[in-house]
Each structure stands twice: as C-alpha cells, then as structure tokens.
Image 1 (tube, rainbow, N blue to C red):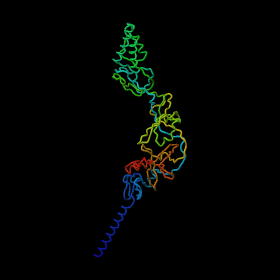
Image 2 (image 1 turned 120 degrees about the vertical axis):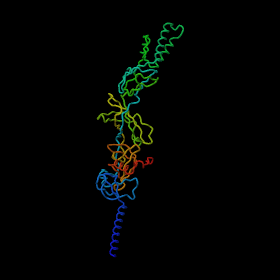
Image 3 (image 1 turned 30 degrees about the vertical axis):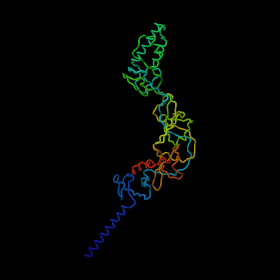
Image 4 (image 1 turned 90 degrees about the horizontal axis):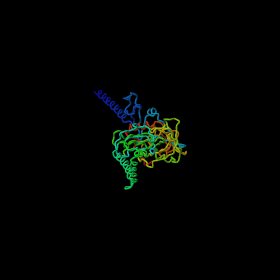
Length: 401
C-alpha cells in the first residue's frame, strides 16, 4: 500500500511538471510564423498548415511601438529587404515630370446653330474627321430663317419699285441684311438672294475654322434650338503637355525656363516649349497642382492622350537623397521605411523634392544617419496593411511636415 502511494505521487509530479513546461512554452515571448505565408501565426513550433514548410520562431517585441513592423530573418531574405544610411549629395540639373498630352483648349471651336430649326443633312458624321475652314457642315430647315430671307427679297423689290420716294428702303434693306448676317449667312449667300428670286427651303452652314471633330452633338433629322452645339473642332497644330507637381517641387520650377518634352511612343523625338500655366490653386488633400507646357505638333503626329515626360532645368544643390524606389508616393504624400532595430521597421512621412538620375530629394522628415529601406519598401507596406489592417499613411499628420 505504501509503495502504491509513492508511485501515484511520482506520476502526479511528472504530469504537473509537463503541464508547467507547456504553460511556460505557451506564455513564452515567441510566436511561430511561415516565411511564405506570414498570415500564419502559431504559439508552438510545427509545420505551416498551408505550404507545409517548418514554422519560423519570431520574438515578440516587448517595448516596440504599435506602428512598428517586425519580420523574421527568412522574411527579410525572401523579401530582398535591404537598408542603407541616408547621406547628403548633389541633386538637380533637371526635374523629370510624367505628363499627358491634351488638346490645346485655346484652339478649339464650337460650331453652333445660329437659328432654331431641323438639321436635315450632316456632311461630317465621324469623330476624328478633319474639317477645313469653309467646308459645308450641315443644312438646316428653319421657317424663321426662310421668312427672313423672303423679307429681304421683298424689301429689295419694293426698293426698286418705289425708289425710296415714300419710305427709306435703304434702311430697311440694311436691317434685313443685318438679321441674315447675325443668323450666320455669308456675304455670298446673301448676294445669291439678291440675284436669285427662288428661295431654297434649306440653308447651308459652313465651318468657321479648320480642325478635327472631337464631338458630334447633333443628328440628322434632329430639331435644334438657337445656340445649340452641332459639333466641336480642335486644332492639333499645338498641344498641351500637362503634369502634376507636388507643392514641394514648385520651388525648383523656373516659370521662365524652356522645357523639353519627350515622348515614349516616339523614341528620340522631342519638342521644346515654355511653361505657360501653373495652377495657382493647390489641392489641400493631395498637395498637388497642375503644370502646363504648350508644344508644337508638326504634321499632327502627336495625339491627345499620349504620355510624355517634361524635363525642366534646375540648379544643382546639396541635399539628402534616396533611390527613387525607396520612397512610396501616394496621393496623400510620400513615406519611407526606417529600420529601428534588428528586422524591425517603422513608416515615416517625408517631404520630397526633385528627381534626378534615379534618386529623389528628401527635403524634410529625415536626418543624416537614418537607416532607410532602399529595396522592399512596397513589400513592407503591404505586410503592414495585412497585419495591422490599416495603411501606415493613416498614422501620419501632414501638418507637421
């Protein structure tokens, strides 16, 4: 009986020790994750339930910030995450802006109906058709215009018959002619009314300018009101190259400088022009404004909607610089990832300046000696969003920049 009691006591002691070891293991400051599937986080070692690879131990940070991101050694290697110490260097010479070619709005023409009526014939039916100045565009049936033409002819006939003996028909003729001119009839059309007694039910209207049709706003058989738009024309002999510029880059822009515009769709082709507009209003949410360069378009080879690069000359100066890929640029601003400890990283908002030869200027937010992630920044951003459920940009206050 005594021996049985001793055996039972020893068994309970062993079970208690094993339980204590398991509790110590569960409460240890370590979790296990998979380098291929970082969403897997276990309290004990084993294999990944997704890819079956051995789990990697990761030590929990006891004093780290909630905004920091900690990775395992394998995650750092697989993500090709490398860091470098930021230093000062020369940057400048030129600023490269990504732009889009758009129609020169100063060279667009809206062809409208000068009188109410029904459009019975359109001579151009396709967007993109080229219209020369003087080309017939449409024929319109208008009772009001036909009455005005008839009134002009009757006034001319009465002038010939009565010869201004009773009424000043010269004044009446001038008034009737002015009405026809205001409704868009040309001198040749009015001259034809003087020599031809037969009045056509339809009146033709001609293009006041040359250009490509950018929109057709009327159809054959459609009634149109006075002033209604029939079509719009664009002269593509000049185009606008428009680019978005951060507020931090405006100080480097010389409004009097000559800009060179290059076109990736036409390697080796470029055009030069001056900056003719910088939007004075800044978007408070994006801190971006619009810059515009007007360029010639010989032969109409360039088309609106094409991408372009605007190269602006700028003076070289000493500044902190980073590789362009190290900076994450979004509509809300720009951020980089700093290394705060071994395999530990934190997002930091920065104010950027010009770009030159694959490097970008850091105007504010960093200091010499900061260790910055220069490759793998976008992977860290994605990992943070996945683990924290929020964008690291949400934790930054732009007013403090």
